[in-house]
Image (cartoon, rainbow, N blue to C red; front, side, top):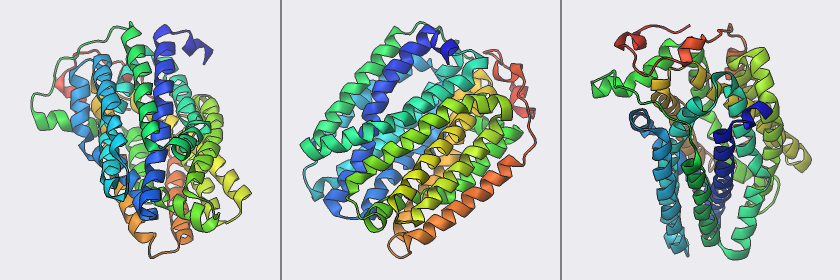
Length: 413
């Protein structure tokens, strides 16, 4: 980590991005709490997360954009637009305005998909190949660690001054990440288009995932798990309301506890990557999440608290394993499209499961949904943990900017 933080641009971007993530975490939590307060419906609150995830189906288009332009200027434009758009939440006053919450969630999801792909690709030219694991670990620790303060701060600001003030805070936070991007100096390579057919260009990322065995294992098993994991976006409100008998704003407390586990997971994930490899780290993270989520069947607050800490630890290990695998096993010119293709394979089943969970929660005991979710996640984790390790070649991630068309047709080791 110390070696990573000696890199000037990595330090600058991490600082600006951290402030921005604080605003985002505070707002995302408040959107769900706001919807619950306006409608008094767990399903309505859960649908906020559905709206956030739904735009991921357009990820391939985002990947094409990211691979055609320089990533840093693109991020400046994206974050600037978000800073202005989020202020539309100032017009939410009563139940009739709840559609604005959903519209903003869709907007955040769409621009977040584009930004995530560009950010991942920018990391591969800012951070040395051998430090990408540490880079993902520190960014993940920071992102999830903000759960320690951002959700509580967001919920507190919402309770004291309303959601409009939280929107203003999030808008201001974007200024910091834009400033950080403008201060960065790392040159970005320009990549010549290899695929001149739009369909081939759009599908290049998905094809790379399919022919690269470890990526196929991680991405597809994750998609399978997320067919049920999306239930938790609605289940959590039932756990808070029916299980723990707390108000909706208690979600901020649980998110903070998840942040504690996430910090521990992020600080240890890089070492796990070096010893176990990306596939097994992702599998162990998935297993930890499933075990932690199982605590939701209980109405005992200490047990639920421990479970959500374990789940947070697992989330960090899983995401670090997944993101590092995508970066080190993908040529530079395909970074955007591979990241976006993975987003489609992962977020589409998640989006479906969030919608299904919002329906099922009204007719099925939430504890049964928790058990189904935990068992399915455990099976996917077991699959990853039993795969043979495949070490990525150095050249695989550092393909020159201009590559031949045959690059995509050859299976990767």
